[in-house]
Image (tube, rainbow, N blue to C red; front, top):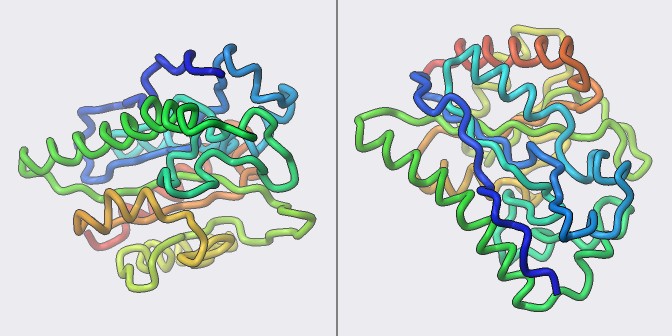
Length: 249
């Protein structure tokens, strides 16, 4: 029973004193799995693929943090250990299957093993975000929550032409404005609630810390083949920065 190895803090703060109203969160920033977990029975290539993390998302989010002078809170562990964009009640929070890949190290976990990952990854990560938002409010600062993700261009053999997805609840006026501005500022294929939408279990982060706190919020999904290198990351960080700067706050 693996009940050690998760002593590393799950939340990494980048530019914590950033002056922007925007707070960036990257839940799937890392593909790190501690040695005690033996890659959860996967090959290193599988861990480094899109099932282990959001490829290019952290690098893009870091550039965005610089361009906006915004704080970024990034996850230090692979989502295969625990997906911080899922509540503990969701079975997919510790996935036994990711797309078509079985995760041997996540099968037949005891309640203790699940609780260990929740206690060491999920709870402190979300606590860090909650405390940061609370401190900003106490200082009289506004917070706009923006989460940065990437998605694979082909999922279960189905091609995804969308290049930027703006994901939100249907009544989220702020997110809809973000979508409109991104469409106006570029020729990219920008769509609302694609490739995911509110019917998928993907809005936990923005709901828990954004909607529930009555904060403007949006989840952004960039197709990962567009941000695999520094040139693409620069293009997309600039577009997102320009988009957010053009939204009426």
